[in-house]
Length: 321
Image (cartoon, rainbow, N blue to C red; front, side, top):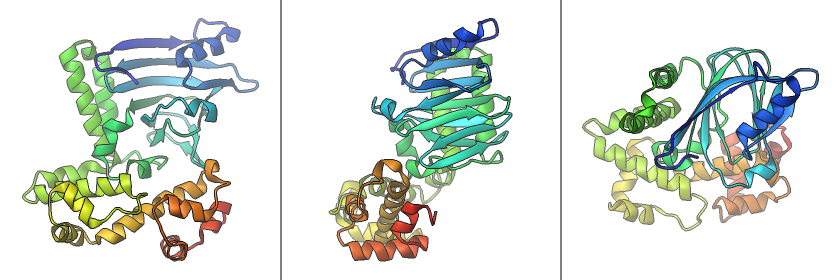
């Protein structure tokens, strides 16, 4: 990802490039972040523009006749950025975390650079992507990992606004002005959070119950990011927030859940993801249960079956989703 003040523009087009030189050109653009593979029998073609900004990267255009792959080897580079991929026309295939998606025109999905990913345009078309560091987006969303690889319909609040705003920033060339660049990126971050589900929290935080809503939001964020710790409790989360345990319990109760049920739900979500990921295929179910914060295997199995209507082994084998 870009540094604090970095700004650069890359225009990539294969219109006047011989076919045997196109893939090397694309590999040079992507550098070491991904591999570019040629699709058999189809010449690679690309036309897109990339804007590298502070805390963001915009990419507008299209690529066909080739697959872009972030391999298991490349994932080790430490990049943990998240990217909203919007398919503007045609059909775009994306594979990640055991999901094989086919995005139709107008649909979008959030991807993670921490996972092996394959992008392949299945029919002529164009797309848009906004990539941001995880540290920027994670505090704005309760469970950002839960948003990864979920198809976002075209009608989702804010999605069209985000794309139109980003394209306007590019067309009006306002990103070249440092002050406008910082403001534009801040707006892009806010719109991305809006698309991924931060709308209700943002609205509530400006109302009469704003303080309570903000505290509940922070409590959920702390739980989501620390649920794997077996010693996490209502007492230490309350201490982190500067409130009493009973006050925190009332916040959850007013939201329709208890502290314990929310914590258990997050641990189960993490276990469910691990069971579906190839990287954890050799790890015993018992180890996964302990890794996500459960201290009792029987209790984990009961909670898992109650939540998903299937055993952990069923999910791992693919017999249940």
